[in-house]
Length: 173
Image (cartoon, rainbow, N blue to C red):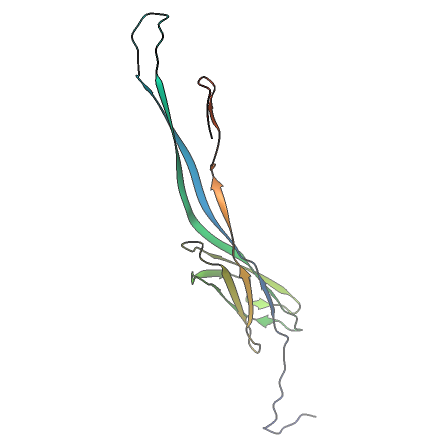
């Protein structure tokens, strides 16, 4: 029998959504090299069999472009343990306040189901170290998940190498 007393509140309580997330940051850096060789004097005059001394100079210059093109991406997984579908919204933020774009295939998670969202951000540098997602669903407290941002470098080229010249017994690392 239902209680009709206006002071009595009947309600239903849904299990909260369960949220987890990942975060990965990366940047690009390109290394190129230039090599300039010169000799002094540049030419000699004499007869066949004469011996001449020349001084060779080899200049190796490392050119570094970057770090640049900072990028953070990851996933936000939303699991619904309730027996009914739940609508939700997602807010995501980095601790350096860089805007984050979240993409979810649906804003409704089925009973016993999971919705996997993705996100990306384009910060100016690698200052962001923490990413926080907040998932809201009507009738439940907000659920928060955090992930540390792990940074990695995409290197094009090489920071070091071996430059041998067997004609002159020259080797530069």
